[in-house]
Length: 92
Image 1 (cartoon, one colour):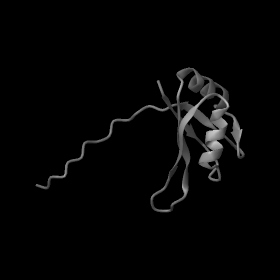
Image 2 (tube, helix red, strand yellow):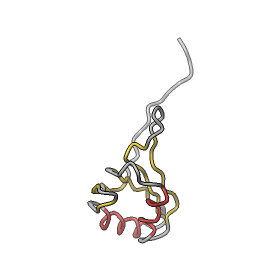
Image 3 (spheres, helix red, strand yellow):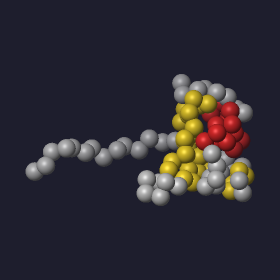
């Protein structure tokens, strides 16, 4: 089963390709994305990686948390889904 990983404290110059390559050392990467600010169109300094195997994801988390990438120490841990607020399209 695929596991989603949060990657924080990234350099603003880190590319999605670099992120994918970093995690690919530990197993198959299904997706790698860096979150972009809507207004400024600049990276926010964090992203998500989805890995195919749980064991590969656990290895990547343990080996990459605290690792220097682009002059910053990465924060790497399992992503926890936050419940999204329910929005309705009705107006009173």
